[in-house]
Length: 157
Image (cartoon, rainbow, N blue to C red; front, side, top):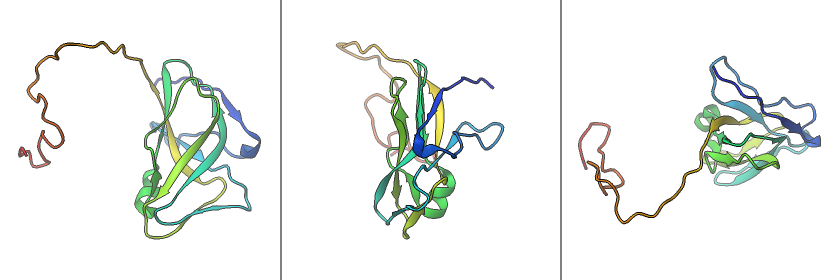
């Protein structure tokens, strides 16, 4: 498995919390935790969203991004997910990593200090050179859009 060193700045309100951490040997996402005050949990009502700080900032190298993804257990068990999934942390961003959580469940959900709230996936990126063209190459699919490649049963729409 390939690894890359990512400098992490722990902010004052993140003191005592773990840095992003992988929960298994082959995990691609490292868990991020909530850096909210111990005495001020955040309750997200059904249909509402909240911006949750993580207490860290990252220095991603050029050519990499951080993707913020939901935790499957929160989604399945509580209907809580990352609103703009995947969120993107650009290589030149040095501010605090914050997570936009949304509650799509039926019950209020409370986020407490240190709760694992999202996953961080580091991935290589590239920038494209966009060049205007008078035409595009032909493909079998062509201009057919949403749903045009069929359903799970293999039939075409």
